Length: 177
Image (cartoon, rainbow, N blue to C red; front, top):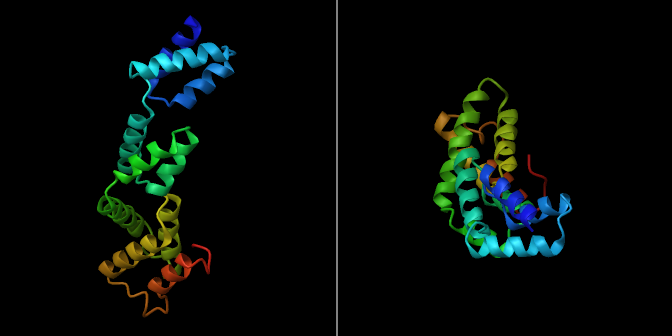
C-alpha cells in the first residue's frame, strides 16, 4: 500500500493526472488491485484526484494553448479516462464565441503563411488545419470564407462556393478537405 501511495504522489507531483491514468500506472508496476483501489479512494477523498477539475483545467489549457475545439478536447479527455459527464461539463464551459475567435486566430496565422499559393490549396490547408484541431466543417468553412473575404479574395468569383462546401459536408455528402 505504501508503494502505491508513493507512486501516486510522485506521479501527481509532475503534473495532474486522472484516476484512470494513476490506476494504469500502478497496475503496470504490479501493485495489487486492492491497494490501488484503497489509494485511489483515499486520494479522491482528500482531493488529490479530481477528474472534473482535471477536465476543466485541460479544456482551458488546451483550448487557449493549442486552439483545440470541443470535439478534439473531448477525445483527449476520453483517452485519459475522464468520465463522460465530467467531459461534457468541461467542454460546455467553453464559450462558443471564444471557440470561433480561436478558429479565426488560427486561420489568420495560416492565411499569412499560404499567400502566393493557389486558392484551392489555401482553402484546403486552412480547412484542414481547423479540422485537425477538432472544428466542425461548417464552422471551418465559414471562418475560412470570412478570412478570405477580409483579405479581399473572392472565392465565389474563382468558382469556389465555400458555403455550399460546408453544407455538403455537414450533410455527409462529401469528405472534408
